[in-house]
Image (cartoon, rainbow, N blue to C red):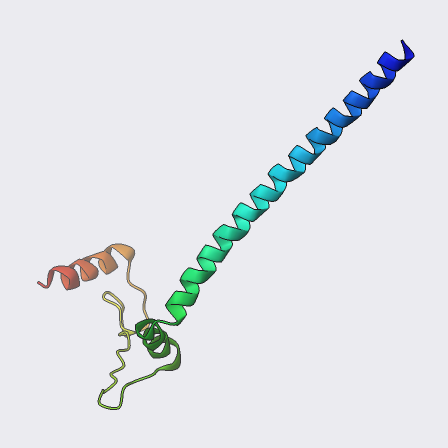
Length: 107
């Protein structure tokens, strides 16, 4: 009876160790999968940074880059909104809407 109990405890301990090892393997496989996905994303970004067209686009947007044969034109928004009055008196909302619609439809 003692030998059977000892063998049972030994088998249970082995089974428990196997379960722990299996769980750790699954966790590590999940981490490997996450790292591989992150590597794929980084490779994609790296490919973008090596693309001359992308680099030129970023230089134009962030550094105001222009080619030697180009002319840069800046377009500023008009501060005057339809329906605003120059006298400082605020118009009622319905009049602002009418002015906006007139501007939109071009009466």
